[in-house]
Length: 160
Image 1 (spheres, rainbow, N blue to C red):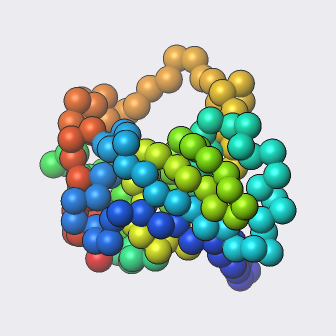
Image 2: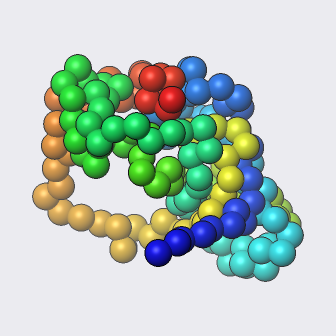
């Protein structure tokens, strides 16, 4: 089976290089950027401005799959790829929850952006707390490194 996606836009961020980029939105809450939705898809932005946060689903255009076991940024022990958020994946799809500041024509102004500049945008979905709320959540092995998450930045070894 072949699956083919076409970008609906492009993400513009201050991160031109993977080095120094936050590894999750919590790493740089104030980092802003814009999301340019291609004009033929701009009608789909109707009513989006009423949401405080949105999910950006994008192609990790600089990531290359290499292994189902990785040693994460925040750990020294090898982990199963699917128990991490490492960008080097069989299907290089990124997901980022960002704060939506404004919608003007086909341009979204966002904050808490942790995406490489020029990343192709595949989809946008609104964050709906009523849908997302979960009780008794666990963060697996990440519980032991939770204090480091906001201070760590990207590392090229997980991309190449």
